[in-house]
Length: 508
Image 1 (cartoon, rainbow, N blue to C red):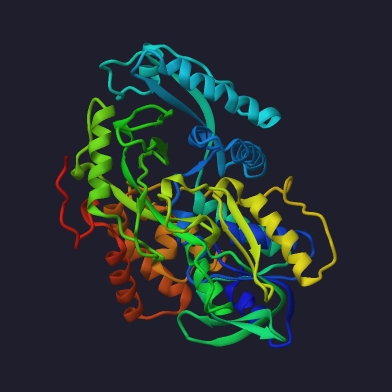
Image 2 (cartoon, helix red, strand yellow; image 1 turned 90 degrees about the horizontal axis):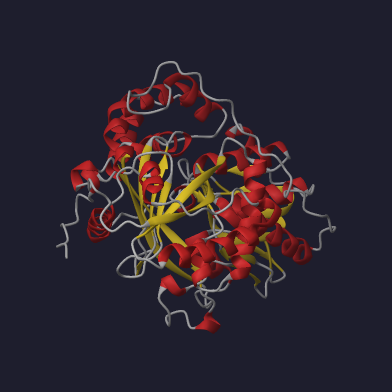
């Protein structure tokens, strides 16, 4: 993907696109990919970097959603399991099977969770990964050596999928581009184009040089996640909100705090939340929280009380418990939970809102897709394009993404590592990020083209000057650019596992 070429195509005043997608996260990229594979002239713009917001800050799971069974959302679980199987097939190397253990500390829990997970297997059908098992105490400890031993009676083992969310997003972008789509990051929509009262495009402003131009299209899809209502207000300033925001954070620890290659799922903590402990890229992810009432932001900050909550709960389930000083990195993301006005947007906690997606069209023809989750993004894209084709009067064409293999880049040559603590390499990874994957900022490379800042903030800081210097060579930037990028990147990190401006909350 050459950014200058993408910009030239999108800013061409004579161009008329069939579908314009606003938003370059999981939903927007899936929509653009589906539209392009059907042969529609497809454009996509993203205000920041591809997958910079919520979509790069997930729990790194492609899963059916065991916890949704508890809420009786059988349809959502069935759809998610079907899409999980497709992603495992269509993105090998990016999506892989992962075994999970639900530890049992009460006599009835192996039977209780085993019954639910047997249903989980049946709902997956032919796209299942592996069968649920019921390992005893010693077998559980063999898989999870640092799990709390006291009171452990065994557990239930089941299978789900794990992935690198940013890498999968970029694979979707590459594949969409190969199918003819024009995609542009760091390009914000500042208004909608209307003709005869109908939405027929968007006014776009590039982030760094402030260039403005209209992108005209027969139909526009709003796939902006937590910013859904902002785009809807361009269409109708009186539009009632349809999205509620919930924040979830994850702590990144050394892998030894769980041990082995198996993940653990605590289905119900003392306050009813779900806790995951997941091996990922030779680290351990601990999450997630569900915090209501936070402000909408592209890069939200974790709250001190959220960090304390996860550290305290890890101590309840691990023999050797991590402290705040053991945290290598922290990342926070916002969930766009669909809450249409008819349900009473302020009447329920975010934990009780469905993770299903919501699709609707305004009176002026703006198609909005919101809610949902990574696992079902392909189906969401298909549904959005079906609706967009109807609204835009496009020729009806079937979706082709169910069996579409995504373009995955070659494995990096292990030469010139960025840092001994990171599995990323200076030459191949940085050059490809800038030349082929449209990286424009230091954070683009450190957080999404590589996952350095997600794995080890201290290591990311150590190698950032060398990365910025190489990017400056490739982009034709000067020393002032390097200084500004280093300052901006450092300010985005959570120092020592805690926001610098947040006081430590008192633990219970």
